[in-house]
Length: 156
Image 1 (cartoon, one colour):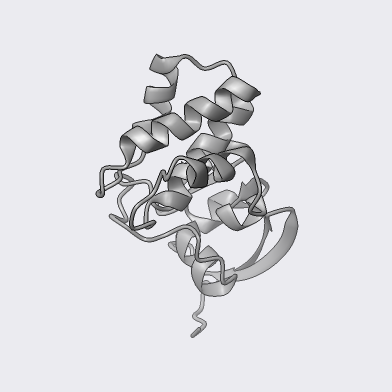
Image 2 (cartoon, one colour; image 1 turned 90 degrees about the vertical axis):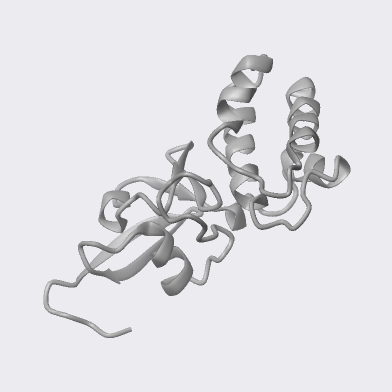
């Protein structure tokens, strides 16, 4: 990484670990997560907030990492798919219900669904659909994703 005048060192709380990054004021969180921290679960897709492949949780709520400036994330708790640890109920449900095809959108959907299960465990069909609208699956695994989420919401 080449450093320029105006770069600054920031501290980010990512997956319950304080990490330092050198950023320009215009650097987005997605690039810092991927390029400086090696956390590649959040994927670059549309890079304008439409697809949701870059979804992370910021203070427990879904956020598009391609739209968040890295400096805006200072002081917030960031959770990436790597921070889930691999054995959450939603991850297991995605496997059980085959809620993925190519897998590119999966990490973003996992983050949205994890937040939904944590924040709104009694969500009804309408609320679940509202939350799922923030992400796009180009392989059309929507029905399987819905079934996975429903199975988790039932057991919480």
